[in-house]
Amino acid sequence: RDTQRKNDLKQYQTALENFANNNNSLFPSRTGDSIQAATTLCTDLGLTQCPLDPKDGTTYRYFYQSDGSDAGAADATTYVLYATIESLDNTYWVVCSDGRSGKLDTSYTFSGTDGACPAGLSP
Image (tube, rainbow, N blue to C red; front, side, top):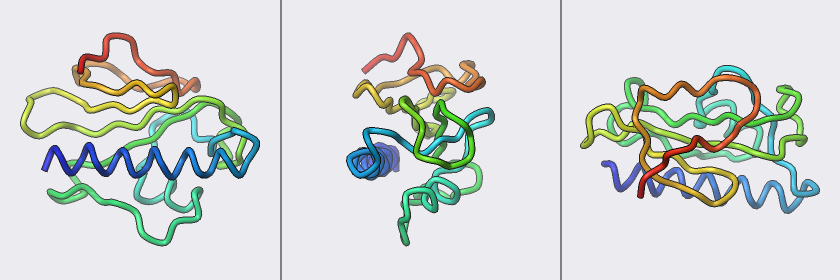
């Protein structure tokens, strides 16, 4: 299931890049608390079907956070996508707008309004 999670986040990343290609290199803006990718982000991207976590979509979910105005408008320049990895206790898989991806300890708090890629990602 963790391989599916990584693939799903890659699908979201591709959709975000396509969105940016059509919106002056800008991404959907969602700041503050991270949003669930399968609901709000899916709508922002204009997708009719979005990947859901293979386990249940409740305990394990995909999340998105960006900089910008937080109105869902195309005015964000950075984003981060992440999901909890099931096979590794206390670990996220993270995908960033700058192309980096990797594992991160779940003690990290995704907060604020910058959508910045966390330091310390490991492959």
